[in-house]
Image (tube, rainbow, N blue to C red; front, top):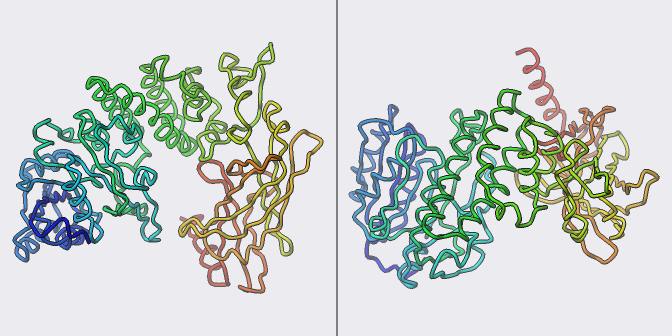
Length: 533
């Protein structure tokens, strides 16, 4: 708790919602529970047709701080109701809360204390993404909020453009009004990206605090996915590119050239890689439309956008797309888009020996890789896991890349399995690397599946070189010859264990484990239902 906020009501919390009666009350109560610093909760209902109006009526009757605004027609997005909230706010400061999220205890006091003590227009704090129903939490842009900081101008920290959320920040209300900072109206997906650009373009004095100030609930199993998760329609990609285009123009027109460049680089490293990893899930029509839209968006990039760090995975991915009018090399691009990136074979050369992307695209040079240290290269490791009754073995193969790996002297692979939901590490081991006749390096290590236990486990590796340096990698899942086949393995600990090695969306190796007769039966019954359905 921050006593500096005193007890004076200083903050309007704008809660927006549409047909979300199941979660709405929880969100509003989390705002009211912030204490006396919250002068009002402006609840904007976007013309809901479920029980939301009744929920808000009950909340307003129970606490006079709740003010309800009902829109006469549904806006189709989040921008218009948030703008209504800005217009209605009567407190010196305003912040935003979505109906399916919550404010953690002390969030408002922490933000308000920084705003008043540092005399800033904007304060940002740590947002935590909470996966439901698992409860796993992952910090959003954690490095920005690792320590307290005060910035006179946004360009002092260009990485601010990476945090495009509006909900983990407190804004001085008259700052938003004086600079006409508003959200795009109507159905405009990714309105946060444009709003954040408008905030930064107005060059506010900012403070960053390490406290948790927002809990973003991610419900992947929900019947109606949030806009940011619903990426199966290419319209979502069109909306994403348009929001990023507008953000760049806003920053550039405001004279914020450094922020504008950083925003474009962020698009390549974040958005482009995220969607490219999922191309294998889409049909041919989607892929062609996505490819065309991406090429049109990237056509606006200029020489300065391409010259900075030409070997960065996002930039190389973009250069391949621009070099080919048709979708191509999708499996290899998926690997390159992974985190960490993997540049898989073939490693082609032009006629003069220069490293290039492929023989079909010799104009796309990879020459900068020749001068980068080996621990900065997107190294490729293949992995195969074949569960057996005895001695399940993980087999690994590290590929050479234009002679750079051999010159660094790879010594070993540090192996670790990480539980998908909890993030818990297990099964750590070190596997020595040995040079193979084909020019690669091979390693293997036993895996105790029973020691891992039930759940989904992701493989994490680190290549260690002769000088002690290393680089984190994920492994490409080898297919074929039954390597990704489901296996039932006897277990002294569980009686029986069902193991399913598989390739993730980015091509990395993971394994699902079900333990005990009931767990195995449940998985097999579900499989049978899907086959019969």
